[in-house]
Image (cartoon, rainbow, N blue to C red; front, side, top):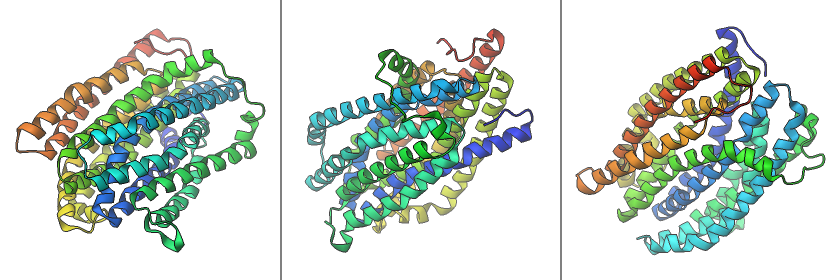
Amino acid sequence: MQSTTTIRGKLRQFAVILIPILVTQLALSAITFFDTNMSGKFSSVDLAGVAIATSIWVPVQTGLSGILMGITPIVSQLVGGRQENKVAYQVNQALWLSVLLAVIVLAAGYAVVPSILGAMSLEPEVRQVAAGFLAAISAGIIPLFAYTVLRCFIDALGQTKMSMVITLITLPINVGLNALFIYGFWGFPRLGGAGAGVASAITYWAVLLIAILTIHKVHPFAGYGIFRGMSRISFSAWKGHLKIGLPIGLSIFLETSVFAAVTLLMSGFDTATIAAHQAALNFASTLYMLPLSICMSLTILVGFEVGSGRLKDAWQYAKLGIGTAIILSLMTAVILLVAGRQVAGLYSNEPAVISLIQQFLLYAIFFQISDAIATPTQGALRGYKDVNVAFVLALVSFWVIGLPVGYVLANYTDWQAFGYWIGLITGLAAGAALMLRRLVNIQRRFTKQQEPLGSPVSS
């Protein structure tokens, strides 16, 4: 990664960082997509079961992975400030932290998940599929969290192509394992939706092993000596990681958990509605990879420029990223308008479910436009190490505005299940406006005060 002085140079650098991240995120999203898609083709009961299971699993997984993503601005600012000798120590500490978080999730999951599923008004078959999926995927939690740290290290160096290659290698592994364990091809057990959890767990172990070998053997990662003598656990280092990563993780958890809460609240609707909601949400989540990839790119680029003291360049990258996201969101809106029924057909063979999915997808258009502003803005703020206010804004936008509005519309108007989506769109739009205002204020404060390099902004 290198500094640039012209807009053309920044566009080139932005593309070099963004495109591999986008491919990587789409590939990672494709794992969930194929879990949902292939389970739906097995039966609507399995699709609903996987929907319930992922609504419990995804907020936990993304929230805690978000905590570990705090290593990205740490490494990018160290590299920008020419302090490469401190990188291995920080990555080691993040790896230890990832193991601790994984153990906590496993213990909590086995303690509370049966009670959560038992308290829901689910058909017995749907509950059985959800329980099987969660039990199976739990075997992959430790490697998934550890890989998150290693991937953030790779990306923070600007080597996003390598993350792309690693993820693309594992995608066909996941699809093949899905075929074996969902449908029972070649004599394997025919597990239905639960088989998707088995396939994902094995895939997470594969991606971790590939990442370890790459970082240990391939230039420039090998030069950092990440695995040449692991540092002992340092609680003071963990405190530094959590100071940045915890607000990031909580912000992500608040956003993903509100969607999960909606899915759980919709358990009172019929199986077809639950399945259609989850299918539409799954496709919207796939489209979300566009602004999310821009978000991750801005964290790297803005963090590098802030670490180097080039605040004007950091601001130019922020504007470039947000503008690109808005353009892409308008393009995805056209896709949903023109090809909504074809997209719905990817998830089910049942006409009633396809029709419901198509209706839900119309609301996803408004998701994309708000996400195009809110998500890249969050990425830029993380590059400045400004993370606490984003957490508060996420709390207000989704849980104070979005979910209550959705609950009222779903239960006290004729909108029914669609009311939840209207509420979420309302919260997301409010969050986008508040995030953008925060970014403008932070840039002005940095420019005025010229704070020491690597110092987080006070909230």
